[in-house]
Length: 342
View 1 (cartoon, rainbow, N blue to C red):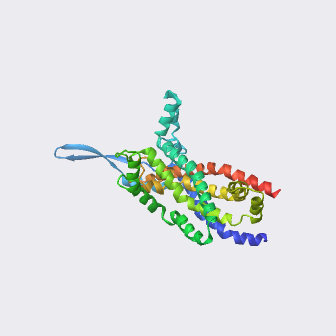
View 2: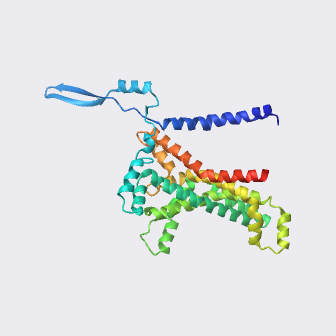
View 3: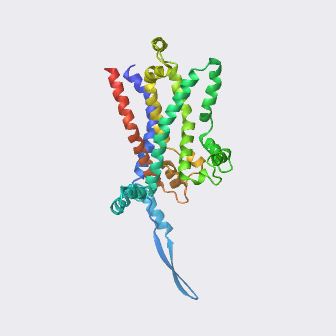
């Protein structure tokens, strides 16, 4: 393809990426360095038959004039990044100096809102991602080995979690694990504890959210791996069978190496998706037990006073976190690409 043809072919995509990805990111990063102007307060003396009183009120005209002069707000640099609601450097330093042991330090750090949300986000991401990849692969292998008349039906049932809207799926499962729901009653009977409530226990709620995350995301991995299984060289499989390889050995030494690039692709997508976990927490109404970086942003934007600067700062930290998570996978992909090209 000629360079000029390639440029004209790529230009609409580049324009869309600049408009919908690059510019919003630049805007968010810029907003994270500014905070809203403080209101201009004035004291007004009101005198009446019983004497004079002094009241403090907002000078609306002066406040509006300051906001019009600097619409972005007041420049504060990295102050929002280091405040107690985010990286909390000062609180971390105090906790390190005053804690008797490392366990006490960790407990104090987990009480900080940002690090509590980060802990759940990382736990959810690092548990959900490998398990959903393994589950999706297992389902793909099982469905691929079925008789062709059963494959269509099983593919339909395997894709059901993907068809259901995530928020609706989380709501349904939330009702089922409620103390009056079928799963909640079953768990109470299983452990012989009539007072057991999944929604009142933080560890059980984390487990529910993680199980739901694996269940809802596994169909994506299944679709990718099932498509990949159709490209496995049959000659290689037949040779392995002639050599006496068991089913497990065929999967381990033929199928998994063939699907390795797809594993990387699924891992990339799911790492990004899981790091932005939001719908399960809202669907389970589990904000009292689990906070993620996305719910952090949502709470900043949905309050009576929208904290745009705080939400922008958390968004930037989320982007940095995703970049850190993806870096090892991207480096490995780049090395594999270079190894194949030489």
